Image (tube, one colour):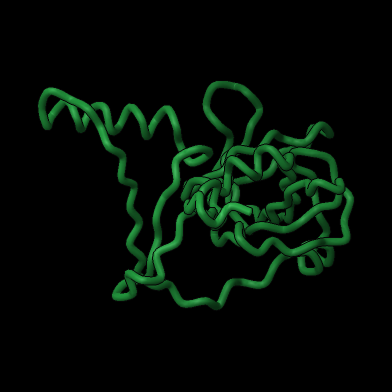
Length: 179
């Protein structure tokens, strides 16, 4: 098994952390080497200051169909909310890592237990029927998406802890508290 650094741009990272996808698509490196299915990939993102942060680990699933040269990597774990700064310089795409480099920059596996959360999106919709209201709802969700539409989140059994999130970040939705 070989080890790889899979580097994505800050913009791609911002989009990637919005969805719970099982797979990330990475461009193959420019040196002509190709990862094999099952190879270990440390997932890195370019930060605003051009440094790199580790946001997850994955295994190569194989080439993406269509001849683009991209490689599909299945997440084994993700650290979207707490990426770890790494001391490594790599270009975008997949590049080989030594075993020592992979061990040094690979983020530790998260130990946080998974909890149950309620997530809600409520939108007032004008429609002539319930079925049309549902269609309009999904159209709004698709058009606005996580960049504009707040989702309300609270832990099971603690409705008073409800918090609005936009772009995966807590967002104040009370105009009286905007200062």
